[in-house]
Image (cartoon, rainbow, N blue to C red; front, side, top):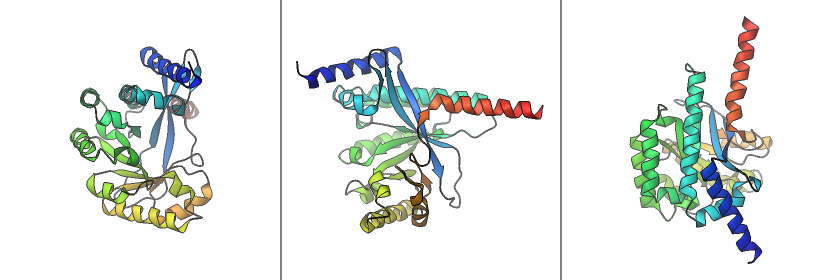
Length: 276
């Protein structure tokens, strides 16, 4: 048996154990508002990122296990797990801070999930029976992922929108159908691909593409997020383009979602003691 086959078996076993033993972890990366447009509000925003703490192989990143999960059609089950974790965290946040607005959580969905009637039913049932308003969730779809599945994606989006869900199109600008997708599908947010963000100061063509996407998105009522911001020096240029929000290691590195609640709770406890 060659090393590639062994590696596939190792990672498949890790994914199946994680689903069985509840060993996935959710990290969150903050999305920060760069500038306010009229009629927009500013709740806390976070993109959820999945990690795997395998009982045999230790900590694994998505690049370690996503490919085999896709080949074994396990991505819908991972997406369902992340959604469940997101709803549970929002419920805990709501209980801890009942008078504060809920954050927006951006939850990635795979193309396998979008094509699965079973996955849709699972997601829809969880949204219907959760005390959390569905508009606290933004379902994130990748432009390259949906290019060949536009009709199915449109149906999926329509069904979840009826329940109150919102949508974000990410990696915008990586392919050649960006403007067509913006016209065809009703997104609330769009994310400029990190290749555009990183080249903004050095490549005038990428800058023009980013500016065009931003203008069209605004005309269609969507807000624009620049993802992959690795250098704060680019922020004035993004603001000049009209970008609304930013995300990346220069803004806030990812960390465990559970820590956000504990940090906020500790801060509240300290504030309460200081005023007593």
